[in-house]
Image (cartoon, rainbow, N blue to C red; front, side, top):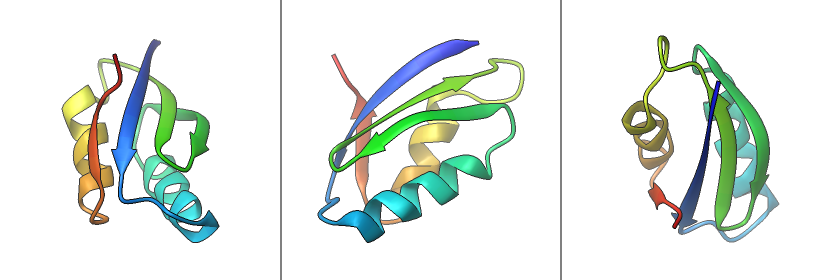
Length: 69
């Protein structure tokens, strides 16, 4: 499993956090570590998910996401 931390723009409340957690929870091979306003950390199986697919799941909700430095 590989760890990925994303910076997320556009989140502003607990509902946003819940939406991101739900979306990440639906991705095969992805385990959510933490989701907070402005960031998310997940562990993923590279055979089932990619950083791009994880980022896209968040962006499909209307947020902007990029790998945190």
